[in-house]
Amino acid sequence: MKEYRKRIADDILKRKLEGKGAVLIEGPKWCGKTTTAEQIAASILYMDDPEKKEQNITMSELNPKRLLAGATPRLIDEWQLAPKLWDAIRFEVDHRGELGQFVLTGSAVPADTKKITHSGTGRFTWLTMRPMSLYESGDSTGEVSLKDLFDGISMIDGGSNISIDHLAYLICRGGWPQAVDMREEIALDQAMDYYDAVVHFDINRADNVQKNPDRVRRFMRSYARNQGSQVANTVIAQDIAANDETPINEETIASYTNALRKIFVVEDMPAWNPNLRSKTAIRSSDTRYYVDPSIAAAALGIGPNDLINDLKTFGFLFETLCVRDLRVFADALNGEVYHYRDKDGQECDAVVHLKNGRYGLIEIKLGGDKLIEEGAGSLKTMQAKIDTDRMKAPSFLMVLTGTGDYAYRRHDGVYVVPVGCLKN
Figure: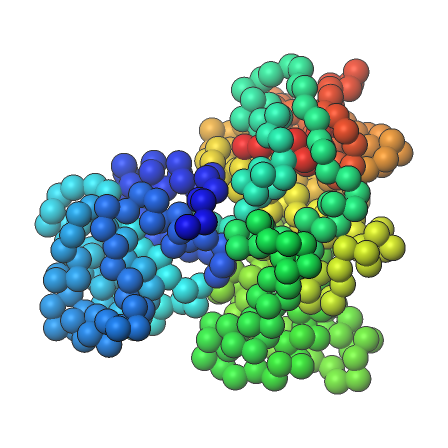
């Protein structure tokens, strides 16, 4: 049996079960939702067991309480096959009067909410899982902790073993648990298989609308070309028209984006709105990102060697990898990841903002002294704009890099951290 790699979500799930009667784990398919839930479950119901699937669905209509009987926490896998279980679980949580009763996992495709009469407020809590961070997959040494930086550590010490060639591979492999221990050429196939499944099946199941696979491919390719930008649907439509003979209108772009958002293939980043010393207008558009950089690579039809030969694209997809990891880490710290951009052109690639009001400013650079210097300068300028009489000063300023052997603190206080040594 394949050894389980510990996930950052393990501790989050445990904590959430202590506070609510049921936890619903959401996220893209293949990211490890069921496997993670199995680690904590005392009993399990696999709704899609081929030998019992029809029987389980029938029982959910006739006597759902029977399916919920078992040691707790009880895992209900593929619960969306029987949406009426939602209300049955809510009822059980109410009447048992105990916490940590159920964990629900299932397909990334949304359940039929017409059969659900109660929102679950007060009984359910949600946990979003994503593909593995480099720390979870064993590709980061984890010597530099984001939590330590928030706690005010002044000096850091860490090293990264990731070469530029291996980083290109990690971007194209992605954080899919199944791919982590595979031979490189087989591991790279996994993201392409994922992409093909999205194009042919999953995007249609998200909203029950049949779509032309070629149009979906063109859309996903354009979305990949616009990683890390705040482009409008009109711009994506124009990009497709400029690169393909058949245009796609804005309404189609919006419907495709919403469908991919429902199945957690794309996860755009909201804008951060700090208190500033000036009345600078802040851009409020979301930044476009795939949930994992490997999806963008697959959509573009490129591999590690292509990234090495196109450093501009390499930089964009490296940013997507960093955002994925920062989101995983922020979840563990009870925080969110935002971006900042104002009308004057001042940007900050990532702002990790915790619920207690602390935040860190991060610039993402592939590497090189010139880019690191540029990133540090931008962070200092951004810091100077913040009105610290009305909000806290940033806990740290960090340039997150792809290349570079060591993590260190510059004389100006800016941390330089290779992604290959970062953890939550």
